[in-house]
Length: 313
Image 1 (cartoon, rainbow, N blue to C red):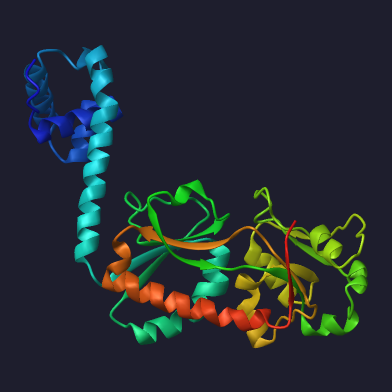
Image 2: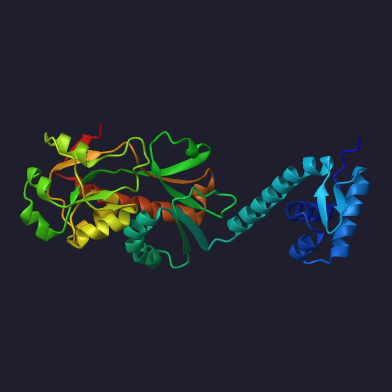
């Protein structure tokens, strides 16, 4: 059997028609006439020596050979598209695309961007704030900031540029600190729950923090938020006390709109990891961002001074 590949245009016509199961729709996608697309597919079938479609009344369906070819043809064009985007991204030295969760983007990255922009006006940062795991190749991502455990399988084949350590402790509006001066007094406070990381097997809970203080907490109730930044915002407004993550509350702590008056802080197994494809860390735009990010992360260490950092159970 001759394994010589057919023309790429013919394969592209087939792939589009196989997805749509319509020559007309595929022709519209490729901006050609249905007759031109039909000609490309016929030439492909001649090259193969077999039909790829059954032409029915007003519709088409794939033959057995077409069903075998369609998924791999689609995968091949997706790989070509990803490769083309990667090549263009390497050549474009002015744009850097970062993905991070909405809360980290809003509470950690956004307040600091003025500083980065001042230091690197030649770099245009673009953000994809989502909890969905984006792909470096297909989603045009340069740097990913992901939250999870240190042995995350999703890091395989990637360069880990930085780990941002995390700890949690009660955070509240300064006015509430006077009303709740001791850990025991928090049992009478409105407790705010951050459920954004409840899906993690080893996430830290209010019960864990009270236990670290030697307090048997009752069944606690209070408002629950699925987004961590919303929980922080509620605490800043004085609505209650949140078991806040330092990464998300650090800006508010510096500005004084939140306080963390108790020494005990729990260190979870999960933290933020800053990732990029191996080799990409040396690109000037990526290297500049990673260097700046590391410097900013190091500034958080003073928030932990004087605290009793306890490994989470």
